[in-house]
Amino acid sequence: MSRKTARRAIDKLEAIYAQLPRVACKGLCSTACGPIPMTTLEADRMRKADRDHRSPAVRSDYTCIYLTDRKRCAVYAVRPLICRVWGVVKRMSCMHGCVPDRWLSDHEFVDAAKAIERIGGPMVVTALAGLTTGYGSFLDLDTSRMPPEFADELAERTRGLRAIHGGRIAGLAPGDGSWVDIDALRKKS
Image 1 (cartoon, rainbow, N blue to C red):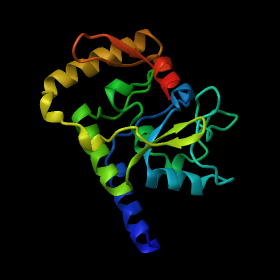
Image 2 (image 1 turned 30 degrees about the vertical axis):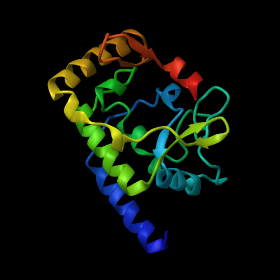
Image 3 (image 1 turned 180 degrees about the horizontal axis):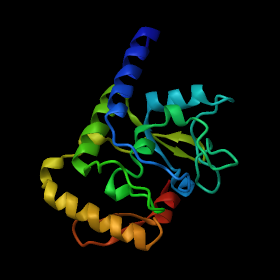
Image 4 (image 1 turned 90 degrees about the horizontal axis):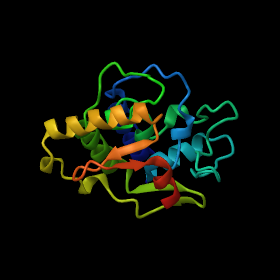
């Protein structure tokens, strides 16, 4: 990718990011930082922004390598979409009570993720050995199969469970209403 093409792609990413809701973060949610899905362009931006030019990965405790000793993001300005929507999508609500200026619906999130993926290339996810492929694609998601009202109901129920369980719930299964534990997801990566 030429420098000019890369700059245009980054400008498009930033335009989408600028439309996302904002949350006044208390800086207490670092346990949620990893494994992190992102596009290859987002990963490259993070690597370039890192002082040591490390590729995105997770530590042995499955937290992001870019977390500082003070549990803050060292590459915050170029963080990927998933980090930007943490706390602004009900299914990824903050376990410490931070609330956004408006909630981003699941459908809005998927639309933004699809746009980011079209611009930023294939999805990868951080793992112990670095970035891995085969994470899947937001482009494959069909939001028309789940009415917005039903998605909103599941999102609100997930948000409630996350509050009760200190953020340890990653989401509710649409079929049987069972939940997915974050620690179980981390062990799969």
